Length: 209
Image 1 (cartoon, helix red, strand yellow):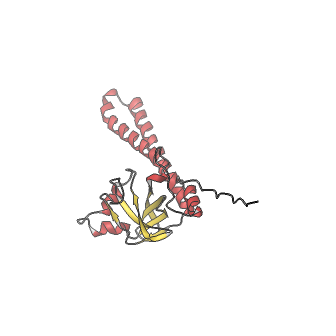
Image 2 (tube, helix red, strand yellow; image 1 turned 180 degrees about the vertical axis):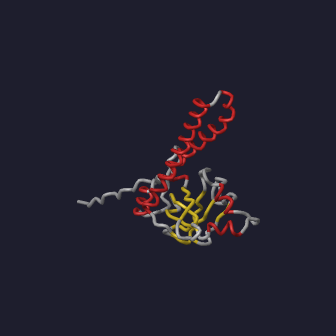
Image 3 (cartoon, one colour; image 1 turned 45 degrees about the vertical axis):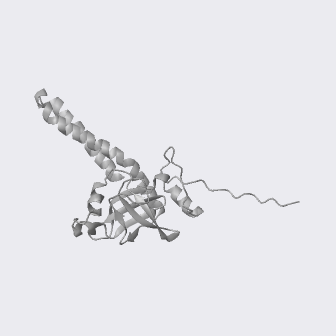
C-alpha cells in the first residue's frame, strides 16, 4: 500500500512538473513533445488509484491468514471445466475437505500478464515456471486469497496478487455461498473482506408443557 502511494505521488508530481516546465519555460511549439509524457503520467496515476482497493483487501487477507508454501499446484491458462468463466485458474484443496479441489480464478485483469507468462504453455522456459514454484499462498480458496511468487532467495513473497470467488464479491445478483464452511471459517473470511452468508441462528427448542 505504501509503495502504491509513493508511485501515485511520483506520477502526479511528474505531471505537475512537466506541465509547469511547458507553461513557464517553453513556447507553445513544444506542446506536441509534452503531450505523450503528460498522457502517460496521467495513465500511470489512474492505474495506481485502481490498485488501492485490491491492496486494501490483500492487507486484510494477510491479517487473517498466514503464508503457506505450496508445491505442484494445478494451474491452467484455458477455461477450467468446472466453471463458466474463461480465465486463468489455480486448483487448491478445500481446507475442510482436502480431497476436494476448488478452482480459484484470476477474475481481475490487472497485473495478470506477469502470472500468465509463468503459468506458461508447453513451450514456456522452465526457468520462468520455476519463479512461481513453490507458490506463496494465504487465504481460503472458497472465498478470498492472496498468492505471491518467492523472492530470488525464496525467503519473502513478492508480486502479491488478490484472488477471489465471484460469489464472495457482493456483486448485485450474485448470492454468496458457504461451501459448507464452519462458523469460524466463515467469520475469518468475512473479516478478510469476503461476502459470505449470514450465520443461521438455531431454532429455539420449545419444551412441551
